[in-house]
Structure formats: structure tokens, C-alpha cells
Image (cartoon, rainbow, N blue to C red; front, top):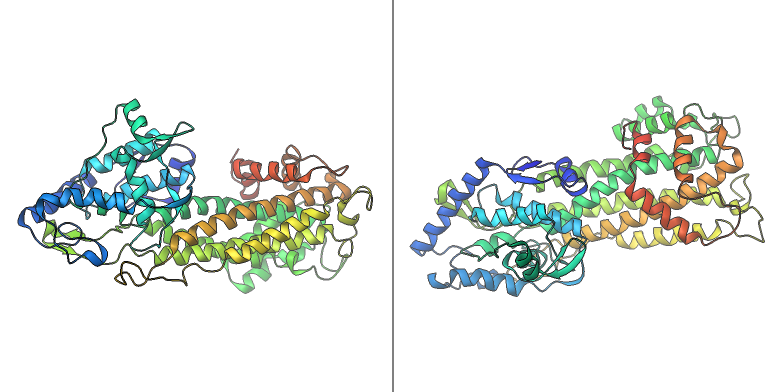
Length: 505
């Protein structure tokens, strides 16, 4: 069980809810704050004060006064008009994260929404009633308007949901489960869609997968080091400490631990004096990407507890301020950074693949083939990795450097953060495929060297991997192997446990 209060949600909590299916509840104190904030909104409506989004229109129409009898209709109109997203839907896990994040933000008690609205968000998340939310259409300020409008529709009995593996009309699902659709009142539509929860939800799911993949990259690199008889001297702790980056030190320590006891690694000068950068600089390159992950985690853990709608209500309603907390720039920059950091895991992995398959760079059979010439072996797997790396380079172009004015130039600078988050997710998925190819090639090189010479830990990694992809003793449809290994990397936890020394089985 994870308790939401608007202030203390962590990525670890979200991992429990998204991957381990833990239920969420609201703290009593947070619901009391919500009630107090709601009373302030009702007082504003009663007095007829001019307050943005409560008694006025939206965006460039903020100077248009709304009659008290129309304030509820204003909120429904907002949801309908803003639900114009396009493209394929976000993954179901992202929709669930959006529900939880929006509820948590509203529980800070500065948004003026009723408790029953938040309780509906929580109910949907806990019951697996997951709104169908199109991926495209957000500028990332004033928040993720279009995606969040689609998130809200099913709460009202409209739009579509994923439920128990089916895509169906929300009205059908709610009727089947005996859930009463909401009717929005003053400010509630605005409070629900003015926020960064789409980009943040994508960012969280991507970060969790990226962190796991970073551990796997270290483990696969260790196998490659053995497959190429790499020089372990370069991973000595003293040289890492002389640079001073904690992440670099940690990567080198993991590699040393993984290859400890290996009969395949070499010392400086034993076979050669230095390895190529893709081997020798694993701590420096992987370590730098680990630094990116640390930065991204810090920003996400701030954002998941942030009030990101507008206006916000303070001091029991005596202070109502229109500001810009909906602007996605902090997450936009973090997602662009995540794209670059993950792309580098793929870039250096592809160079290690090249060293595994290129006979001019190693003493292994050309392209790891059993019958070079008659059989091409892993030749085209390297092509695929190179293609994915090139694609990542285009996806890693920062989305946040672009801005197109909207709402008649009232909203004249936007973040494009959701585009950045989607790119980071695509890059992470590509990197998993690249690393799968590296693992397949590393295991094949190890077969030629002698798997009995592996260290105890990489022997475990090798054996786990061989349950998914068998030894290449003839050319076959390698796409099937790559897909199988990629799927295993996404779903399993054994490899992560071996790499970290934890128990992830």
C-alpha cells in the first residue's frame, strides 16, 4: 500500500504501484487540506470575484467574465474542447502513472478541487480502469492539456479506457462496475488538466526502465570484456579515484566484481598495452550516463510532488495567484538529458559489437561465424545495432530548444517536454535492443574462448542468457533471437541482481 499526501511520493513508491501493483490511498490530512481549498473556491464563486479559470475564460480568453450560472459548464466545455490529442495511445502503465500523479498533486490542497474527484482518480488507478490517452498533441505548457483532457474524460463517463486487456467505452466499464461518473464543478476541469503529468508519467516509466538497463549494460559489457580478453588493469580503483566521479568509480567496481576470478581477462602488457576506448573507457562513459540518471531522478522526485496547475490557492483562500507552475521546462530539459545519456549507452555498445564481429579487430572467427563465407554469422546484427544508434542520434535532438507560441500569443513560450519524454522512451527501447545484440555476440565469443574460463558471476549471466538464445552453430533468423533477448531483458530481474549483488530473482 502506498499513501499519497502530495509531498512524500517517491520513485520507489511508484515502482511498487506500477510494476508490483500496490494499491494507493490518500492520507486523511491531505483530504482535509483539499476540503479547505475547495471552500475557498466556492466562496470565490459566491462573491463573483474575477479569478482566472474559475470565473473567467482560459488562455487569451482570460479577460472574458463567466456568469456564476455557467461556471460548471465552463469546466465541461474545457475538457471537451481540449480533448483533441492524436496518435497511438500511451502505454497502459503511463496512463496509470498519470492518474496517480494527478491525484498526488491535487492532494497538496492548493488546487480547489473536491475530494470526490481525487477519489475517482484513485479508484481508476486501483481498479485498473486506465484511460486511453493519445500520445501526441501536448506543448508541455500550459501543462499537458490535451493528454490530461483525455485522462479526465473517462472520469465523466466519456472517452475510452483499457480494462482487463480490452479497449472499451468508459461508459460501458463504469456501468459494469457500478461507478457513478463525475460532474465537474467550478475550477475542477482546469485543476485536472493544468499540469505536467503526461511528460512526468512517461519520464518515470522510462527512468525506471533506463536505470535497470544501465545495470544490464554494465553486466553485458563485462561479458564482452571477457569475450575480447580485455585488460582489467584499466578498471583499477586508483585510476578511477584520480578522476573523482563517484559514478565512474561505481561502474569500475561493478566490472571488477563481475570479472573477478576470470581466466579470460588480461593484465596490462600481457597481450597488449591498451584496449580500445569502447572497452577501456567503460567506467568513464557508463559513469557519465549514470550521472545523467541521477540528475533525472532528482528532478522527477521533485515534480511528482509538485502543484502544477493554475491558479493556486493559499492562506484559506485569501491569496489566489495565477502563475506558471504548469510550465514543463524542468522536466523537458531532464528528458532531453535522459535521451542523450541513454543514447550513449547504445553508442558505446555498438562499438563493442563491432570489435566482437570484425576479424580485423580481434582473433575470433570473422563475424563469429562457424563457417565464414558460407555463413554470415553476426554480420548483419552489427548493421542493426548501427541503424538503431543512428536513429537514436536523431531522437536525441533536444525537444526543449523548440517553442511555438499558442493561444493567440498569450502562451508564447512552451517546453515541448512531452515530446522530449517520448523521445527518451523510444531511445531507451532502442538501447535495449542494441545491448541484446551485444549480449548475443559476447556469448558467442565466449563459446569460442571457453565458457568454463568465465568468472563465477559472468558464468551466471552467460547461463541465464543461454536459456533465451542458444549458441549460433548455423545461420538462422536472428531477428527472433534479438526479440527474445530484448523481451527477457525488459521483464527479468535476475541479470540486475547478479550485476548489483542484490536479490532480484
